[in-house]
Length: 431
Ligand code: ACO
Image (tube, rainbow, N blue to C red):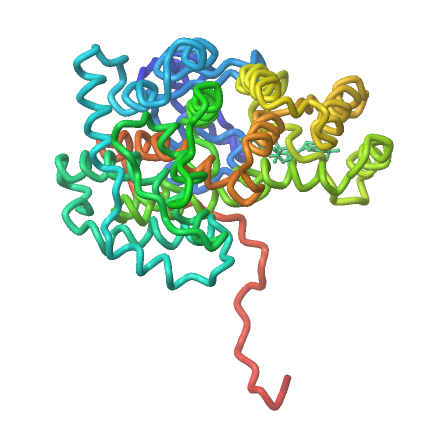
């Protein structure tokens, strides 16, 4: 952490406290309140952590106002254009772009870890036949700690490394198996001669009776979806992983916690919710009705795929994703698909509407990723599992960083207690 001699003064009841200010390499300064309770006997209050930094990190930087996203200093649009997912995984995990030899070794390692323990197949079969793939993934990833005992010791650097490789390598296999199980098709084993994205597409769409030949444009689009979702600094699921890990929990349990958090419609579930919303809208002429509902304070309805906690100008991932959507739709010749027509019209109206302009609500990455995945043939239930596959490397990189941080403490927020104060127990007959 870059320490400075600057301080912020806080005066409470006439007494002044000096709080150190830390300057990051990029982004706003941070007021250090770690000693505040000890010195002044007060807590700070920040539900949703909108103004609170919880850790030092060197992995990802976002400037929400400028619409910037960088991994280890490299802008996301350059990575999406010039790099590919496994190279970005290496960058996130180890801090630098790999040499050709390092990349080859890393890709080989990941490829060789894609199969899962054969006994895990039985574990899958315990789920209800139509279980949501996210439900299966939360369970199966958590259960990895029961199958891979030799990589659960977080104090052992070698075990941490193996757990990282296993999670990145096996997550597509697990997501594809969760999908196959949910539609009653046999599991498809990974193939080592395919790249990460092609292998995933094949595991999802091949059947024993007929192989699936991966189109390079679709493989590239899949790889881009993985790349664009790889990490996003201290978002809800990543913070969940860090919080779970702060107690010393094993990596598989921590990533299962991240998957559970990602599932919510305000986070990773937004791409599924967005496509479902497009289906509910049903036709272009009903759009005004839904826009009116989104603006109505008394209606809980929100336009899914619009808005972001951090990006208040545009989502830089959405710009790349939009381009990718055009390529895929062009290839598949589905530009007349009614859902896509609704999506395009919704985007056109919303970005001109005063409510959305004033509140800085723009289409986010999930607005376009859902459209691409739908065109590729994925059902909406697979959208969030695909996000989970992509984000695994981000979770793992942040988890590794936290474990190496000497300042790491168990995460334990305080509260503003507004409940009853002390009162005596009332016997049941007197209530
Ligand atoms: N549609 C309509 N109004 C909205 C929307 C929306 N999608 N998003 C925010 N608003 C309004 C809110 O009602 C609020 O209005 P108010 O100031 O009059 O009360 C204002 O904009 C600010 O909204 P907050 O909820 O305070 O903003 P926050 O930063 O907490 O929420 C969030 C961000 C959760 C992403 C929100 O915009 C949302 O629910 N969007 C839809 C879900 C979605 O697409 N999530 C994907 C996020 S991207 C990702 O996870 C990869």
